[in-house]
Amino acid sequence: MASNDTKKVIRALHECFGGYAIVFKEVASHKPEKSQHVDASSGGDMSYSTDPVAGQSLVDELKLLAMQIDKEATKLIVVFMKDPVVSSECVPVTDMFMKAVMLFASRWIQISASNIGGARYHMLRRCVLKLMQAGETLVKTLDEAKGKAVHVGHDSGNHASGSMAGGGAGEVSAAAKSFLKLPNTNAEAVCSWMSQASDMATDALEELEAAAAQRKEILAAGGGDGDDTSTQSIASTESAPAAAADFVGGEDDFFAQMMSNMMDMNMGDFTKWDAADMVLIPNVIGMIKVATKTISKTQGLVVKFSSATPDATLPSNLAVIEEILFDTSGEVTKHVDELVEAAYVPINKERLSAEAEIIHAYVDKILSAARQLAGATAPSLKWIDVLARAAVHNRDKLSVSSAE
View 1: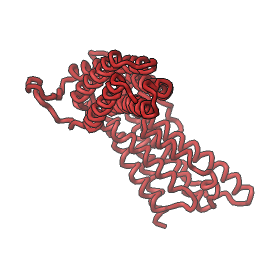
View 2: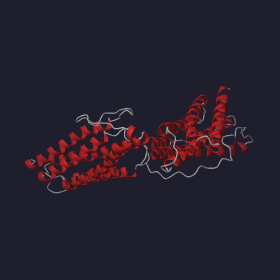
View 3: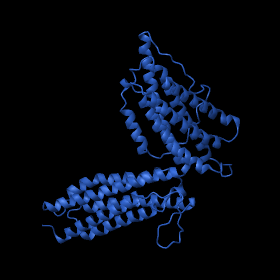
View 4: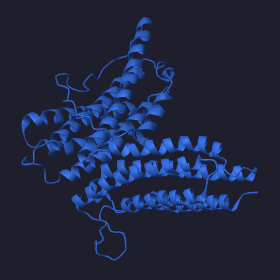
């Protein structure tokens, strides 16, 4: 039978777990509109500030609180690994852990995309949810392990809770440290997002090019090579974009899922193309090349402006441009994935045409933003015009082929 002291320990854990679940739900549901603004003097209600300085201050505080949660989680583990666990130690530590979590949550729900930027908000939210998820797992593990130990007649159950919760504490620590890797500006967040989008599209491109080369060899050996028309993907004279700054934002779940989809591709689905199929493939490859080049070159412009000196002339709508690039880059990558899937044997020509049209629309939107960033100088606009023509060329080729 459990002692009164052990019952206090169990009660403390139950209350902690129940309270944590409520806070987690509030945090997860927090998605303020960009236009949302409440005056800071509005009593005890949470307020949203559109002031970027206030937003930066909140983010800095949030990072410190994330590290505080990590420290309190470690203390929680130390206390619950003792044998026996005593309420005089357990209850205060549990309370401190929850206070850190609640303070963290209160700061988080004061942050919106309007005061730190949409791309940065997206990455910060992902870190917040990972930390909260890790904390919930830790508290739940302790709660369940302690309850089972009491049920079988052991007051402490320290071996079960300690070994099981040790991994949970590691997850909390890793999630907390991810805050330290977040971009410091919205421009850096946009660049990180665009870099991931470009990398994913490049992976799809390389796989498709390798499959096309392999199939051409097979068809050539058999006396047929397919009519490889449309090599006008991108002007070969275009130089590669300057290397972007190494902005560390962490791998996003969106791109992780894209990578998973690509890993599931079966090369055999590509290498069964016949000669008629091979007429289409160069334009599929061309469209993906346009997409990757568009993202990487435009990213270079964002890097340029993000590192500009304070006295530099920046576009008046730079924040709007950044949001457009953030919103569209991921969409381009998603539809590149769809385009590649449409190229599976048997090729779905209608889907190829539809996806090429969608990619062209997004590429056109990114190039429009790039044109605003580049300004009116002819050298800056040359590559934009080249990519715009290439996008139209490949879209039209796939559309015509689909209609035949």
